[in-house]
Structure formats: structure tokens, C-alpha cells
Length: 554
Image 1 (tube, rainbow, N blue to C red):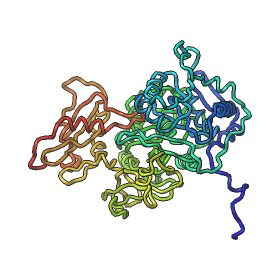
Image 2: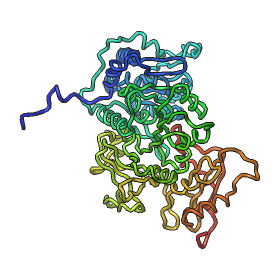
Image 3: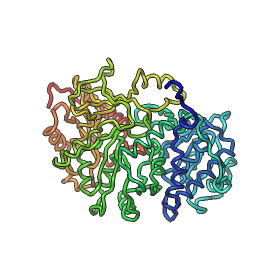
Image 4: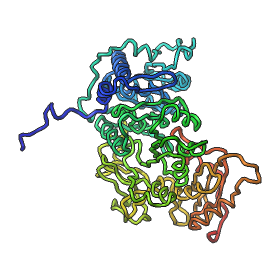
């Protein structure tokens, strides 16, 4: 069989961009995007993306150039996930909640040639560009607006400014989009959130995004023509690859500029939403903002932080069906999921929630998942107790970090991608994340999982959010410090006390894991994707000074 080799007919590079062409053929008259009073069909979206890609190429954007976008979940953001790589460029979706200094650094680091910006973020972007060194080229700007009312006289003062709809209108609908020469060609550049370290530019290729997109649809069991509500930011790991996924299954994308619990429930009722994604903070929001149970079940895929079992339980009692997964920016989406077993349905609801809080097993697209001793590289025992670092191997793992060979080599040593997450492997082969390596609290030589303590605190009546970090301690080195926000503002005499929460934890945890400090806050600091910013809380705990010396555990 040696003469049988790859040839043109069987070796076309894998790319998710072809999903749009197919959607235009199969689902051409079906709704692709709904935003306020605007609705596009898949044939319209296909034509608009081709026109936009044509115009992007006409601006001098070459294959491999980086094109950035600073916008929320608008139809424009969705279209750019196809149009930018269809022009041969690399899409860089920027977090809209970053400050001007950080955005300036990212745009310079990526050498972005063109920036699409929502009109509400225009001032932020201009502040970022003003920080460019005098000799650094300023990228061209394309302004995204909802309509003519969003345009003011000052906008026209910028010499390099173009309007989004102008690009669409003047583009060629018969444009031959730029197909990748190799499936290893880069398609997206995503910067990590930087909650624990300096942001890094994660580069993914067409092949990796294709694998992740198909894998995610299979693992979540997404049917044809779902109605998908965009509560997960598309700038967060490209919405876990579901912009391309919705095209593959001909789904309807319900776009939102911003949302809260009432908006989510209103959209579910108005559009018969079937699917949505979000971090556990979104689950917390909707479970605490419910008025009635859902008329029809809604599928939710959650990840981004280990979800407390108490929140999972509350959410599912409302009629949502929660699926839990795990992934990173470096994997382009979720590569681990808590694959559900039928016989678990016979268990009590609280036990089901506990099982579902685990991250689970590798998806069909992941080659290998393990928990290893970071010093020896050997896999730890599958006993649910032995901690180790989570490592992965598979086709959707990033190509590497842009302009950072040292960082790439460090996390992709040998045959593994080292995640930096600490977890345990249970006897049934299911992974459970215990913490980020930097969030583990070491008290008197004992490793304490902040996630485990938080999960208990979430079970205390009235708790809305909880985060546990290390506080310096004169005797133990460091001890758990809990930051808590409440569901509402009860009268002073009804507010829980620090002692009540400590006693509650003491009844459910080993004493060395019980928080020695409880701090009540109106709201905990979070990233735009809903992750609690523990590095901020650690600084607050550190500023409180070391706790007094103790001679024994309480």
C-alpha cells in the first residue's frame, strides 16, 4: 500500500469556514442572526461575510496579518469570525473590559493592522492608540454602529476611520475567499485573561478550530437548528468555538449587547431559546433571578470555573439542563466534560449535582487526559484525593504563544500540555479540578483546595458569591480567608455573621480547612467572563496583615 499517498482529492486542509457555505445552501432561508429588530438569514450572512472579506483584503490585509475586533456579542462580531479568516487574516477578539493600557499593549504585541471597534468602545480604543510610541504605525479603524444615531461629528475627525456597513456594501459577494494553504495556518489569536499572570497570545490553527467545533457539537449533543442565546462573550476563546458551530448546524444566533437575568428569561420566552453557554456566575445569576419555572427545558453548558454543586442544583430545579465541561483558551474550548451516565438519574438530586460538579472525562476529540505529579511526571493514583497537575494532549491544543517560545516550551514539555490546574482523578476515571496551582492554600503543611471550601460556603442560606484565598498567618503560614456577598441586603439583625459561616463550614469540613477570616462585600471583583479575580482578593487579604499566632487548630 506504499503507493497510496495523500493527493489533492483527499487532503484538503480542514477549516471551519466551509460551514458557512454549507449553511447558506442547506439553511439559506432560515434565520441565522437575530438582534433587536434585525434578522438575517443564512444566505444573507454568507453574502455579507463574503463582501466583508473582500473589502478587508482590498485594504491591503494579507494572509497572516492580524485583524482585531473590540465589540460585544453583536451580529458584526459574529460575522467577523468568518470574514476575517476568509480574507486570509488572523482574528484577534479583544476583551471589551480591559483598560486602555492593556489594549494598547495587546495591539502592539500582535502588530494588528486593522481594528474593528464598537462605537461604545471607541473612546477606549482611541485612548489605547494614544499610548502607541510615535514610530509605531497606527492600525486602520472600522467603526461598528447599531444605526445612524450612533454617529457624532467627532467620529469623522479620525483620518483612518471607515464604517462597517460601508465595507459590507462595497464588497464583492462573489469573492473567492482565501482558503488556508495548510490546515496548520493560524486562524485566531486570543489573549488570556491575565487574571493570574501577564496576558499571553494564544495562536490556534484552522485544523484545531475545526476539531474543537465538531467535537463540541458532538459532546454537547447539539441538534440541527438550535436557538442559541449569546450570553458567553465571543471574545472569550471565540465563544468556545460556537460561532462556527452554529453555522455547522444551521442554528439561530440570538445576539445581545448586554444582559441580566430578566433579559435572559425574556429572550428565552420570546425566541424559544434551546441552548446557551456561560460561566458559573451566569448560572448563579439566572438561578437567583427566576420568577417561574421554564415552559420548556433549556440546555446550558457551563465552564470557566468549578461550579458549586449548590448552584447546579438550584439551576436545574428551574428547568435548565446543565452540562459541565472544562477547557482553556489554549484548547480553544471544552475538551473535558462530565459525561452523564443514565443510572445516575436514579440518585438523589443533591448527589446528582455533586457528580455533575466534577469536570469529567476527555471528549472524543481529546487524545489523552491525565493528572500527574508535576515533579516526576508520573500519573497520580485514581483515588479522588491525590493532587496533581492536569495535563492534556489533543488536536485542539494551541500552536503556541505568540512571540514567546520560552513560555510555549514550558507549558508544552514532552508529550503534554501542562494546564497549571490542580486536580484529582476519581476511581471511575472522572477528573475533578481542585484549584489553580496559585490558588492552593498551604496551611501548616496541609494543601487546602479553595474550590472545595467555596463549594461548602455556597450551601449556606443567603450566600450569593463566595471566594476563598490565602491570608498570611503568623503561625500557620497562611490560612483560608473567605470573601462573601449575599443574595440581597437583609436587615442588619438578619445578616449572617462571620462566626455563623465559620461554624457552618466547621460542621462540613476538616477544621484546618475552615476559613479563619470571613469578609462580607457587596460584590466580588470579576473578569468580563465571570471569573472571580482572586488575585485582587489576595491583595486585600494580604493588606489585612497576618492573623494572630495560634497554637492549635480551632
